Image (cartoon, rainbow, N blue to C red; front, top):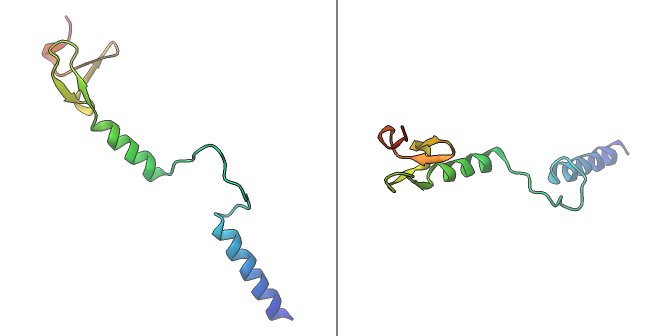
Length: 80
């Protein structure tokens, strides 16, 4: 009898863990991003090219200078 209870408990625990520790049978409509997905999104955003407002040169967004909401490629292109 005790062995049956242990087996049933193990099966119930396995099902609980299989569904992510929650017993929601339907998936939520809003998307939950994992830390890895958020990091990948940031990496994609860093590789995006933006155009310099003054000289129209394209530069990687992570290296661009943002001034008054506009992108510039270098200090020389910044407005005085």
